[in-house]
Amino acid sequence: MDKYEIIIFWSDEDNAFIADVPELPGCMAHGPTHRAALESVEEAMRLWIDTAREFGDPVPEPKRRRLALA
Image (cartoon, rainbow, N blue to C red):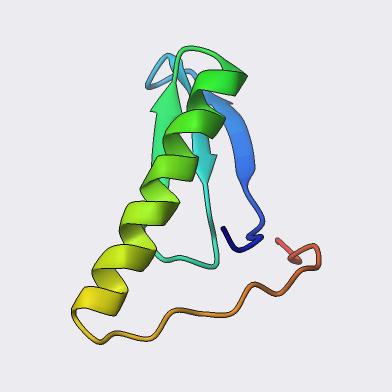
């Protein structure tokens, strides 16, 4: 699996940890624990990439460096 940055944070609104992959638009998952969110988003990343390839959409190369967030 390619190495994309994953950002995990707690959401009071969702009462769960949210895992976001900024380089793969819309690729997010959640879980009751940090580890569960990470495991879920790893599967979501595989599905995101497989779906993009299936439809001939571009798959971004991982930047392999920390993203700058404002």
